[in-house]
Length: 483
Ligand code: PLP
Image (cartoon, rainbow, N blue to C red; front, top):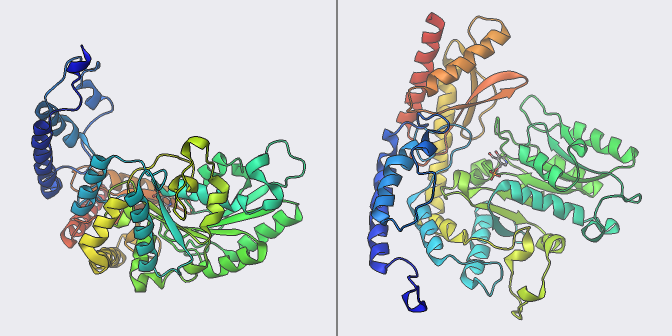
């Protein structure tokens, strides 16, 4: 090939045509996603077997690739956009969010520095500040966007460690130091596994992550926290950080932030709040009221990609003293030095250098739905969750297993059987409910007992879908009991 024949990207006409078709395919998909099974009937290896093992040598027409997408990929996907998806915590790609994601792919910029993405940097600062206002935090909080809450929590635990200047861990590290006390971190036994992973990654170690017991409603027991901190102090260890959860993964319980904040103040510990799921509900004043003390945190993470209808990934971290995070992470080699004064360089606030333009999709979502529209949707989801919980509570043979502060319901079947057989019954019931395809629930364990979990967080879920779920649960239970 001579340099005159360089082919470059595909021709603009071909791109335009394929994008128009993609828009149609996506619109059709979102309109009809409810007709799929939520979880496809595939076995491991089924998808891969249908695809060529070797890459194509010659170019293939985009139309043909899109045909294969429609035939092989879309149907073999677990449909998180499905209105019957009520497992884990829902995520929904809304129209505005998808458009934002597509535009950001088109720009394909890397906002590591303000200079390399002025609009992306400033929009990120702006939308995080919108979200700060929406959840009623003071102006001292500043935000940036990460891929996931897991990374946000890791960043905050590193910042908490950096707030111990006497130990200079940033420069001296932690290994082989006689002068460094063992650092300890505290989270409830219901905190998310991402906190364990952060402790592993930061070299704190799982043995130094104290899992604090919870009360009857699965909230961190503050007296137990105080006792654990005190025992660590007595043993010469250095308590560094408490991770409180607003909306724990199993039950969506809310740790008592005010009393925990007092302990943190007294003990010189960082308070990080993991509000990955329920933080979105804080945009409604009545749900914010369930989280008193939120404004006393040092940092809060919430995931618009969970419950603010923004496609994955988009996790907003709001920090009271962003300079501390910068102090923990900023490294500026010569090749990244710029002369721009008074700007934010987002690379300074975490581990990774490169970053996608995630703010665009969140900006589109907040504008296209408006705060009021987002509140309406969250309220509707919570109302559906509460209504489902009422049906369960009123039904003989079933019981609720935890309070329902938001839109997630933990429940189980309680047939007249010994506890282990009841657990086995609920496990089989879950399989029975998920088998036909229109509904997908998940499970957890509470106090060692098997529990089913239904969560409403999907933009397309309506009362009709929750009724369908309840119908499948009741008939499934009757069938199992009979047979
Ligand atoms: N924190 C809580 C309370 C969660 O429920 C989850 C996931 O469900 C996470 C953190 C992890 O979120 P991510 O996937 O954004 O890391």
